[in-house]
Amino acid sequence: MPETISVLIVDDHAVVRQGLRTFLELQADMEVVGEAPDGEAALECVERLVPDVVLMDLMMPKMDGIEAIRRIRGLSPTTRVIALTSFVDDTKVFGSVKAGAAGYLLKDVQPQDLASAIRTVHRGEALLHPAIAARLMQEFSAPTQTDAFDALTARELEVLRLIADAKTNRDIADELVLSEKTVKTHVSNILQKLHLADRTQAAVYAIRKRLVDID
Image (cartoon, rainbow, N blue to C red; front, side, top):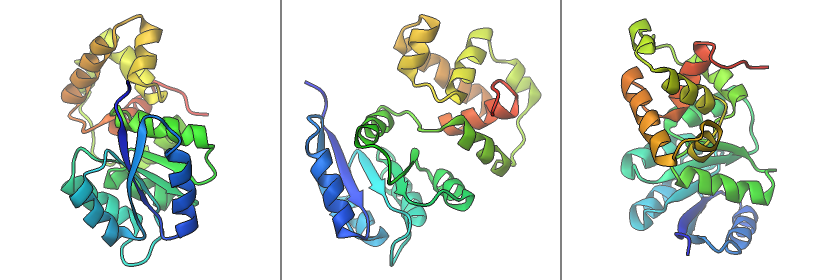
């Protein structure tokens, strides 16, 4: 039986919250543990419920979603946050990812794609499309050392390239004919060698190093 993923829905529109709840409660591996109409209420819910995943609207009263994401990441490091919004401008994308969002989706996302996204971030993966990574890399100003890049093995470079191509650990394992456990070890080694915090930064680094092409 699959592990149940606890989800908190944060949106200032009750109709949106109800629609999301109705769909998610149809998923055998998901449980909606709470709802919040704004960022302040979301923090209270996270502290009390410690959900696995939060679906976070960005434009809300009292406290916006980006600030709420930042505080949630400090309050509950195990909780993963997906920004779910109608906005596609760079400020919102950059702000959400910098604050610690594990994913960024638009509200017109197909229901099954939303469910898949929740499962993906719950596994510890990031939802970062290469096109977004290309825009994000302009926002990461900290230089990376050449010798750190040179310290990567050929296999680690392959894994890094696939991370930047938005592949999950399972996808990478299948493509390189490795076990998922081995891929996780490679990812950990890559982050440690490059002094990066997460897969999002690894993807940005890979694009900066021209390991992948962005159309």
